Each structure stands twice: as structure tokens, then as C-alpha cells.
Length: 216
Ligand code: AMP
Image (cartoon, rainbow, N blue to C red; front, side):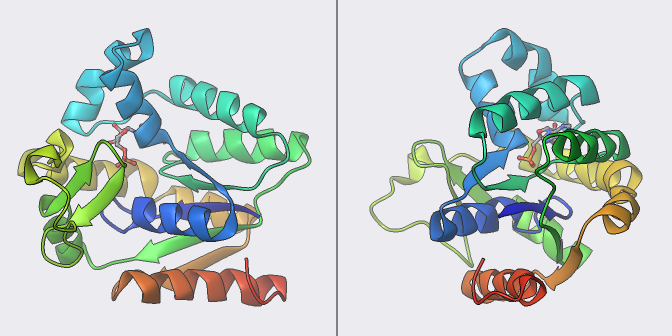
């Protein structure tokens, strides 16, 4: 299964991608995670993209496409779930062409639908655990008691100014990708509100119904 999760920041792409990857043996491919790891390790890529991530701006398409190409090539024929890519029409066109030429097209794109006011609330209360990469929400998905509170990170781009900027970038540059994806892939809208289990089930049902399978 080759799947991409689509939607605004805070829609739950990362959380659901991790769950789907674990449940179905897929590789989770998050461009945001790859950039954050590069920044943490202070690689040349990390130094190049650090200010962009901090501000909530997009990394240039050629840089982003290159790291995705590297990862996809390393996967061979394995299944994957893309999270946070593609985010521009140019990235989507590149990805569709790349996968077509590899004879490995996307099976489905799932767009997570969450009202805008919920997104801001989710992002400002989001915390991540750099040791396990787990994503928490302080109210709705709180970290377990054995995770030390001082280990949790409030991402710099989850601060109010950067959140507003990221939502603007989403509406300006990422939302138009929907038309490209709809034209070339099986594209499903899934309600992204409710419990983590409910959302995962909706995604699995949407994809499975289309494929005529009982699971992903
Ligand atoms: P995310 O973890 O998906 O919210 O991504 C965090 C940040 O990484 C974004 O705000 C961008 O700065 C950068 N980023 C992630 N994915 C992409 C992408 N597909 N294109 C450009 N920049 C990206």
C-alpha cells in the first residue's frame, strides 16, 4: 500500500501516519521529521532549512523532492505512508511523475478534514517526545505518567505567530494541491475529528472499501 495523508498542519497526519505504519507494516515518511532530524544533527541540510522551519515557511521544492527521492529509492518495493508531502503543486507533479516512472503509483490519498479553530487549538497544545517521536496533546492525548515532562518539546513552529503563518502557507500553497491529487489519484476526504481510534478506522475503511479489501 502506497498512501499519502493530506491536510493542514494539526489535522493529525503525523499521528495517524505513525499508527497506520505500525498497524500495517508501512514505512512512515515524514518530510518534517527528516528536516527536524537534519537540524538536530546539524548536517548541511539541517543548517540550510533551520530558519525556514522555525518560521513555518516551506523548504524549496528541489531540496524537498531530493530527500523524498532518496527515501523512496531506499524503500524499493516496500509500502509507505507519506506525511506532509506533497505540499505544493510542483511537489505533487514531481511525485506523480516519479512514482509513475517507477511503476509504483499511489494507491490512495486521504485528506483529513478538521475545522480551522480546532487546528490552532491542537497545535498550541501539541507536545512531542524527541526520544520516541511520539506526538501528544496535553488535553486529549496526554503523555503517559512515566514520560518526564521536561523531555517533551513544544515545537518552535507551534507558537502562535508561526501557527498563523503555517496556516496561511497551507491555504496559499498547499490547499491547491488537492485539485492535482484529485485529478490523478484516488482521493478520499475523511473526518479528522474524534478519537485517534475513530479517525484511524475511518481512514482504513475509506481505503479498504475502495480496494475491495478488508484491511489496508
Ligand atoms: P511538519 O512536521 O509536516 O508540520 O513540517 C514541519 C516543517 O517542515 C514545515 O513547516 C516546513 O518548514 C517543512 N516541511 C515539511 N514538509 C515539507 C514539504 N513537503 N515542503 C516544504 N517544506 C516542508
